[in-house]
Image 1 (cartoon, helix red, strand yellow):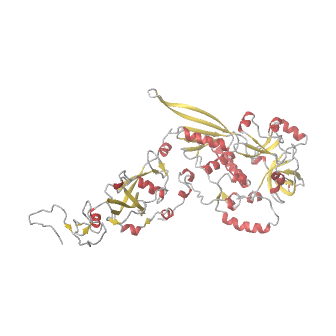
Image 2: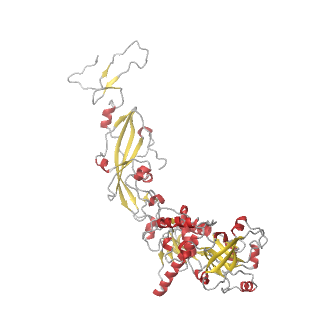
Length: 608
C-alpha cells in the first residue's frame, strides 16, 4: 500500500517511502525495515547517503579519479639503470618485480591516504605488451574502494609510462673531462704482469671495480679513477686484503670558497704491491729464517694473499710473512718466476718420502709429509743427447708419475746475485733442481695451439691502454711480452686448484672436443694418480660471452640481468601476469566499475 500524494504542480521534496507488508507477529527487531527507491532505476534498496543502488552507483562512479594514467620514467642509456628518487639509480630488468615497484611508486594518487574511508586498495598489477622500440611501458591495475558504507567498487584501468633518456651522475662523470675526485695508482716493480692478471680476476670475482669511472693500464701497473674519496678508500681496503701493499696518499687543491670555507681536492693514492710473486725462489737471511719458525733459508713463494706464504721445497715446511715484516726488511728474489729462467724436466720415476722430523726440528704437517717424493728427473733437452739424470726431492712429488713433464729451476747453471747463496752452492748445500709445477694438456706435449684447446677461459676487465711514446718495434715487443705473461699466468692457474678457487673460471668453446679426448685418455690411464690439481669440469661456470663489447661486470645488473628473456618469460618467473600482443589490442583503457561483496587481498608489495 503506497502512501503519499503527489500533486500535479507539487515538487518531490524527498524520496518516496514504501511500507512493505511484514509479519507483525515476529519478535525480530529487524523484521520491519524501511526501504527506498533508487533515484536512478527505481528498485527498492536500503536507504543510503546517495539513495542509489550499487549498480547505478558503479555505472555513475569512477574510483580511478585522482589517479594518473600517464607518467614518465627516466633511464640512463649508458648503464641501462632507472631513476628512482633523489639521484638514486637502480638496475631493473624489463618485466621484473623491481621495475613494477618502480612504476607503482611513480603513479600519483595510488598511495594510501590517512583517511581510511578514502583509501584505495591495489588488488592486482599486470604487464601489458608494448612495441619493443616504442619507449613505452604499460601496466594494468585493478583497484578497489569503498564509496559508501557497505558498497565496494572494483575497477581496472591501464597506466602508460613514457621512457625518457637521462644520464646518471656516474655516466656524466665518465664522459666529463677531469671529473674524477680520487685516483688509485697500483704499481709493482717487476718485469711481468702476472700479479696484475691475478689481481684482475680477484676484482672481477668480488666486483671491487664497481663505481670506478675508468681503468687505465701501464707497463708497470694500473690506474683506477673514482668519483669520490669513499669509493677509492673501499677499493684500497680491498687491495690490502688480497695482496701485500704499501699506501701513500696525497691531495691537490682544485678550488676553494673562503666565505663558506669549502674546498675541493683531488686525491691521489699510490699503492705499491710487494715485488715478490708466486713461485719466486728466495734465499732468506739467517735472522729472518729463524723468525719464521727456523725454516730453511732456501724457500719458494707458495702463494700471495694479504700475507706472503713461503714453503720449503725439500721438506714441505710452510711459513707466512706479513707485509709489515717485508717492507721493514725487503727481500730480493734469488730467481724470479719467468719462463726464461725455467727448465723443462721429464719425470722418469718417483719414490714417496715420509718425514718423521723436519731438518729444522719442527714437526711437518701430515698432509705435507704425504706430498713429498724423490723424483728421478732428466732435462727434456738432454733426452737423446746424454744420460744425465737428477735425483731430487720435491714438495709436489705426489702429483707426478713416470712420463710427466714439469718445470723447475736448474740451480747448476744459474748465476746467483746473493753471495751467501753462492757459498751454499759451493758447499753442496743446495739441490741441483727445484720443481715448480706440473704441466698439463697440450702445454706438456709442446703443442703450438695448446692455448686454444683449453676447456676453460677467464674473464677480463674493460681497460684503456695508456698511450705509449715508444717506437713501433718496441710496442710490438711489449705486446709479445704481454701475451707471454698471460700464457704463463694461465699455466699457473691450470696447475693450482687453490688459486682457481679464488676466481671465476668459465667453460670454453673447446669443451666438446675435449670430452672425446678425455674419454679415450681415461681408458689408457691404468695407473692410479693422486693428482688433484688438474682443471675439472665441475669447477667451470656457464654463461660467459666474450665479444668486443664492454665487460659484463661493468653493468650494475646482477648475473641474471646478463641473460636474455622472451616476451613474458621474466614476468612469469617473477609471478606477474603478462598480457600478450593479441589480448592487449582488445583491451579497454578503462573498464567500468563493478560492485563487489567484500575486499580482496591486496597486491603483495613486500618483495618489491
